[in-house]
Structure formats: C-alpha cells, structure tokens
Length: 316
Image (cartoon, rainbow, N blue to C red; front, side, top):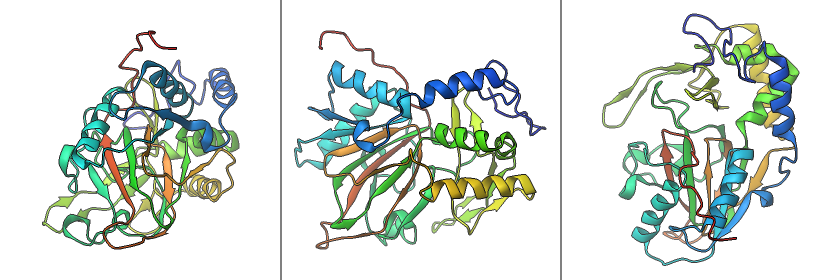
C-alpha cells in the first residue's frame, strides 16, 4: 500500500491514520501512540537469560515494547566467549521476530553479520561506521534502491568503547507526529517520490550503486509507516521546493536534542537492540588497547519485525 501514488505527491491511503485527509483516525492513533510512551531507555530494556532461546515471558515483554516504540533493548549477562556461537545465537534470536531475510552487505562475514569496529581494510576503508568518528542521524540503508529497503536490524554489543560510543534513538512514528502536528504539508513534502536523492557511489571493486531516489515517509504493503532519512549535508540532494526545505529544517531542529522522546543508551557487552529501522546516531568514541576496541555485530533485514513466534503461555 504505497503512501503516495507514482505520479502524485498527494497521500492517498484511505482507512489509515497516515492519510492526511483522515484527521479523526490520525488523532485516535496519535493519542494511543503517545499514551504512556517511555521517556527514557531503561523502559525499553528486557533481561534475557539465553541469547539464542528466549523464554515466552521474555518474548511477550519484548513484543510489547516493540509494538509501542518500534525498538527494544535486551540485556544478556552470559557470554560463551565463542564468536561463532554468539553469531548463531543472534540469528536464532532474530528469528523469534520473523527476521530471516538479511541483507547481503559487502562487509558481512559469518552468518551475514557485519562487525562494526574501527577498520581501514577492504570494503570498510573510508566509511564512518568503521571509524571512531561520530555518526549523524540516519536510518539504515537510506541509500538502498527501492525494493531493497532495510525494514529492521539487530545490533549487539560484544565490546564497548573506553569512552563515548553512545547512541541516540528516535521512533520514526514520533518524528512523523511532530512533523504533522507542526504542519501537515511537511508530511506531504517528505512523502513525495523524489523528496530525497542520494547520488551514485562507485565502490572500491568498481561496482556502481546508482542514484537512490525516493520519499522520506512511505507505507509498507500492510500499512506500516517507514522512514528513509539521513542528516548528512554532502552527497545528498533534496527536492528543490520551499516546503521540503522547511520540513527538513524542522526535522533537523527536532533531532538537535529538541525532542523529549529521544532515547539515549551506551550499550554494554551482552546488550543489544532489535528495531524497525529507527532513527539513530552515534557519538565519537575512544578505544583502549589495539585489538580490544569497540565491537558491535549488526544484521540488517529487508522485512520488519513480526509477531511470528507465539508464546506457549507455559511461563508466567
């Protein structure tokens, strides 16, 4: 169910709160969304006893938080010390939420998992995620071609930084609410099929990623709101009209620590996050001894979280 038609910038999704003409449905959805919304990251955390085999009770808690905020943080205190076993467990954890179609990323290794750590080798050379520099606000895969969007990702901390490396997180549905409340025309502008363009990029191996052109906000086939965004100022082109410029300016202001529902966390070893590709950033960081620096494992999926595994109700 597209948020926009191919030849129009008018949102035309009937029977959904994301239809700009359906004000009553929007207000009802907005009220439910904001009711008891967590105000700090501790409310997003669920302790789990086994990384690869979560209990029914743990699953229910995680599902409940995900349904409310599009993200959940898990806290696993055990560690086998076996990298291969950990990666296998992360895959098993993701499958509880219907996440199995992962991206074939150029830097992925075992189990299609990318190791996010400081590196200047191979396909990681020159890219900020593999440095200790700050990462600005973005959603993952904002440069991907249409049909190859990132719906969700799992991030797991194996080693934290000596100093820094903090993440801020914002639910895209909260960003949507703030923009629509300020001016519905902002949503219309950011839903245009040519709202944001990321120019082509030539990889080190000679392959070329073509221009990526598309909206910021769109809907999945089952009506879920998705967001494609980056706060970068270079190698990006916004649609050249006044309303788009105003909408981007307002969103940048919102993300400049002017949104009270932005969550902040510095993940510790054993902690991780499952989310529907929420807005996020990362502060710069300092590492300790070479070879023992910050290391996070990331798996990106083309589908969003689903309530696939149903609890058996045999646990409390």
